[in-house]
Image 1 (cartoon, rainbow, N blue to C red):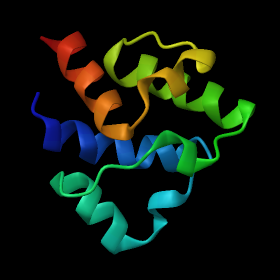
Image 2: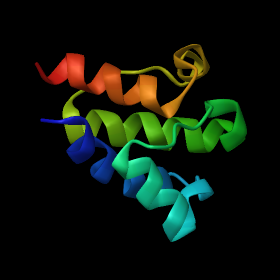
Image 3: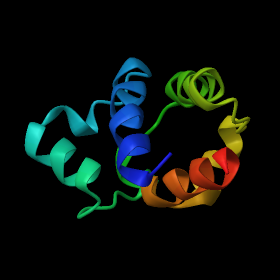
Length: 88
């Protein structure tokens, strides 16, 4: 699975988790195209959203990420890279 496909699937997972940073269609299309990376701190993820995001990652790709480990990834781009490595 390539990064664009992962980004396309990740955008609705973020929204389902209550993280609406990408609700702007330009921001979402730039993220999906890989021309804009987003610092996870900018997303202001609360504990419930973090848990929902981790559940979404587990459900979609079988990737286990603990909510407290999300910030250590730094950016959504690094999260995408983590999914790519997991899916190889």
